[in-house]
Length: 84
Image (cartoon, rainbow, N blue to C red; front, side):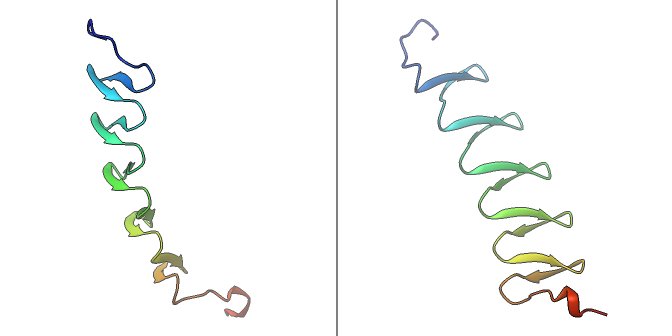
């Protein structure tokens, strides 16, 4: 690549630069680690920590949607069969 010998398993061309194929992907035109970053609502977020809830960014383990309101999943349960 570029007149130099590279290991095909380790290096790929990304945005005209040499990068490690397992570590880097192109996200929103920027280089990011595939394990750590995803695009959420046009912003960069950590895959493990953030999800989109009701159009807002929330921590996956902390918040769930309950009756259209945000509640902590460990504190609130929904008893739909007993609701009026």
